[in-house]
Image 1 (tube, rainbow, N blue to C red):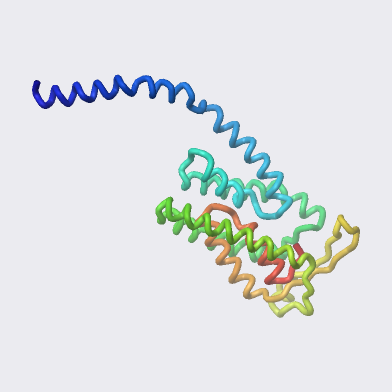
Image 2 (cartoon, rainbow, N blue to C red):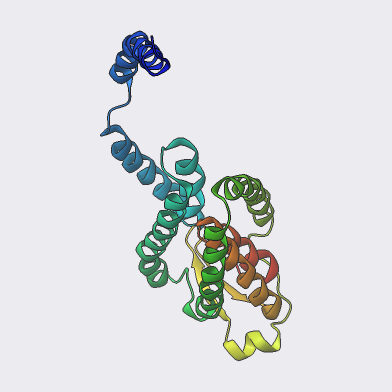
Length: 227
């Protein structure tokens, strides 16, 4: 028997031997329709958790979907930013009407974070997916610590606003529905806050997780705005 014919016979034998196993695997494989349905349910639950917490949907979407769903991480990161944007746009009007959000405070910070997130997205796409995935795990652990720290200062005490805060009119009053009292807020350390939001935007672009996970502690702990 020639070498070519021998190799062909060996390959045929291997295929024949593995045919039952392949058939069994195909029979027990997860159907295609399962993943869209599971993704819909997961996103619904994430929306219920993320928006009240003020952390954006992408913070939960990217780690969970990237870990448990069969999608490439680059695709998940891109969709994560769209999820964060959609959740913010959905919750924004209600928060503005109820006085729980301030455009004067949000606009300068959001402008910096949005511009720097473009740089972050370019960096993230240039890095290998496995490197980004490991770094994302580190960031998720850091998010836990940051959110725990933010719980320690529900109503910060700001003795006096700085000059930049006064120039931008970063102050206001909102009604705490839980207690029914009106709370005046003002901010300080505005320049460090702007620098922090630039860095937050880069991280948001790299990992596609939005910026709510860091916005809340930065506003609360650094700038002294109420959560």
